[in-house]
Amino acid sequence: MSKERIKQLIERRTDQDGLTETGIQGVRLFRATEAIPCVPAVYEPSVVAIVSGSKEAVLDDHRYIYDDSQYLCCPMSMPVKAGTPAASIDDPLYGVFISLSQRVMTELALEMENVGGALPTVKGGLRAQGIRLAKWDAGFSDALLRLLMLEANPMDAAVLGDARLRELYYAILQGEAGKFARQAFGAGNAIARSIAHVSSHLDAPISIDDMASRAGMSRAVFHRKFKQVTTMAPIQFVKSMRLNNAAMKIAAGMTVNEAAIDVGYISPSQFSREFKRMYGQSPRQWSSGHQVAIGSA
Image 1 (cartoon, rainbow, N blue to C red):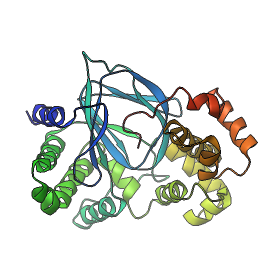
Image 2 (image 1 turned 180 degrees about the horizontal axis):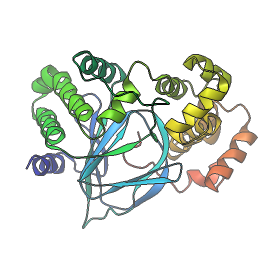
Image 3 (image 1 turned 90 degrees about the vertical axis):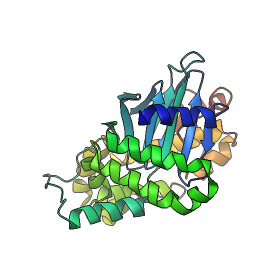
C-alpha cells in the first residue's frame, strides 16, 4: 500500500523525464519513458528506489538490475555504468534518488552500536562490492512515504525534512543492506574514508601511497583491502572515477579539454588515449551521441 501511494506521489510530481527536485535536500524524483543504455556515471553515497519499471547499474562487470522489489544502496562513491534500458512510454520508470549524508549515517551507525547493536566482527574488515541490492521492507516503505508526503507543504518540508530523512536512514540501516551500510559508515572503515577523499579531490594528484598513508596501512595491505571493497585495484578505481566523471561532464555539454582538466588530467593526449581505451570512442565522438543516465548525478 505504501509503495502504491509513493508511485502516485511521483507520478503527480514528475511531468517530464529526468530528475525533479522535491524541496527536501538530497531527495529527488525521476521519470524515464524511453530506453537509455548503460553509460558511464558516478554514484555518490545514495539509495535509489524504483516504484515502477526497472533500472540497471554495472560495477566492474557486476550487473545489478533492480525494480520495486529491491532498492539499490551505494554507501561509497562508485564509478558505474547506469541506465534504463527497459523504459518506454508504455512501461515508464518512476523512482526516488536519496543522497546519504556521511555525517548523519555515521552518527546513526555509532548510536546503534552504543545501544547494543554492535556489528559482528568480520575478519578482513568490510567485504562488499561497492553497491548492494536490498529488499523493500515495511520500515523502508513507510519511512519513504512519510518523507515524500512532506513535499506537498513547503513549511512541513522545511521543519520536518531532516527528521523524516533521518528516519529513512535508520530504516536503511535496519534493513537488508543495513550491515553493509553500517560497515561503510562506521568509524573504523578507512577504505570508505579513502574513497570519499578520492571522490572530492579528483582534480588533484592522487597516489596510491598517499591513499594508503591516509588509511593508515601499508601499500600492500591497502591494495588488498581496497580490492575486497570495490572489486577494483586502487589505480583502476581512480582512473574509472576520473574518466566516468569526465564522460558525464562531456555529455552534459562541457568541452573535452575542460572536462579533462576538471578531473585531473594534465595531458590532453593521455586523456584522449585512456578515454578511448575505456569507452571505445574518442572524447569528441562521445560528446555527439550520449546523455547522462538518470540518477547518476
